[in-house]
Amino acid sequence: MSDKIDDAKAAAANQKPINPAERPKEVEHFGGPIGLDIGTTNIVSARARGSNIQITKQLNAFFTVPATKITGMTLIKNDVLYFSQNGSYYIIGNAADTFANTFNTDTRRPV
Image (tube, rainbow, N blue to C red; front, side, top):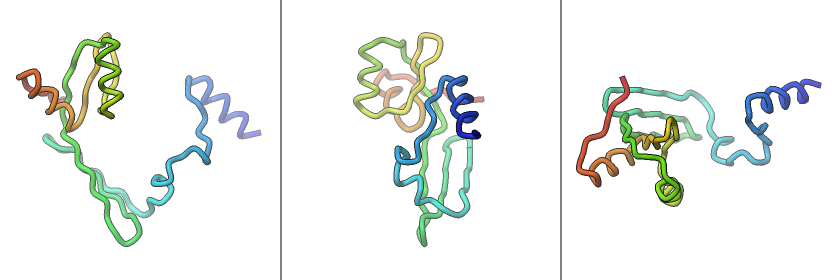
């Protein structure tokens, strides 16, 4: 019965319930503590993976571009981290710096 309640909650939130078989395998292999540092310049996470530590670093910045069909397709094709809000695409992380340089302007930082 709790599965039906969870499915109803997911449907109410416009989200598809996660099927354990659909989860990426890499997510299941992480174990142990996770460290997160949200700094002024970078966001860094560290995860234990067996006897190794995996460190991921992204620029703590964003860059906005008008939301158009062509821009959206380009971002998806190039696997760029972004989200859409109020008619704009917000490019986040390391890609924000690349796009800002392309447009000869600066990235913005969250406050």
